[in-house]
Length: 372
Image 1 (tube, helix red, strand yellow):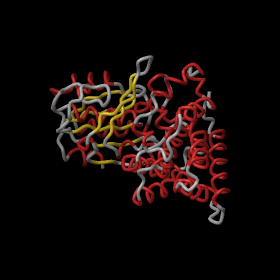
Image 2: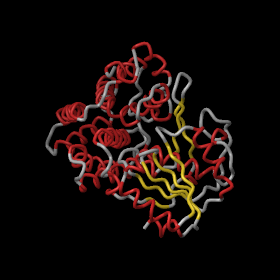
Image 3: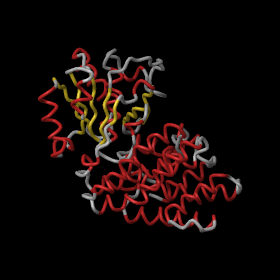
Image 4: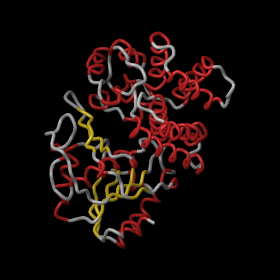
């Protein structure tokens, strides 16, 4: 299928992959052999989360190649890098012309090189979105988006067989990312009936698939369920926004070498508990409280639970899964009490704006403190 789809654009391809995961996967190597027979290929390897420097280097090297398409095969990092590279190849400009918040503020107008996205992990759902998230990690680090409708993939191939080689630890972190995106977009202040339906469908698949995918990585049904859930989570976040976990993920991912899925997995229980407590105290009739209850009924399969019991059940499941999936504490990555103030200061971006309740600085600090 990939050869046929890519061939519709021409015979010159920029292939964006992970640094080593692509080479170590037998299934990906089969794809490489097939593509090599049919296309002239320039390859870009992405190690860790993509940076503006990586994108600019790839664009400078391959701008004159005049690629007919970009194919991104890999996890969220490869897909995000692929989106940014595809968007910039025709013009050859630096992504810093367009990167929100830290760039030069220039309005992107395209055109973008046609992109085909093929995820090999089930987490970010980035293949469905218009955002290319780029990071610089360190004292003056940032995690920002290059975004435009023209960056959306022309074709998406969801093949669960390509996720079978994903190790258990990465499967767990990616799965908790998908779960966080689905739950946060479900209770978001910008949620709507369409995103609610997608989020519920995705949450059902996470309920049925995540633990099995981690503990029995060869279970193709579980892998299929998580790939489906991940892709839906990309759609719901794009149309409903997210919440406090992703608000905190931005400064944590910029200041410390913490994988995005790990941030989500380690903060989800604490953030959900603080959200629920804040609404009990300040807005007890908030509609998102009932949505949390509905999520609890979904995960327990007990439709008759009263709302309080359902919310408590949801919290119990999120806490249990965090332990069962061995989500690490933030201190493992160098986060300390002294860092909390600047983490809180950097958390008030787009994602925090659609959290169902406005949290105080003290409440946000509490989420981080509990996971040190």
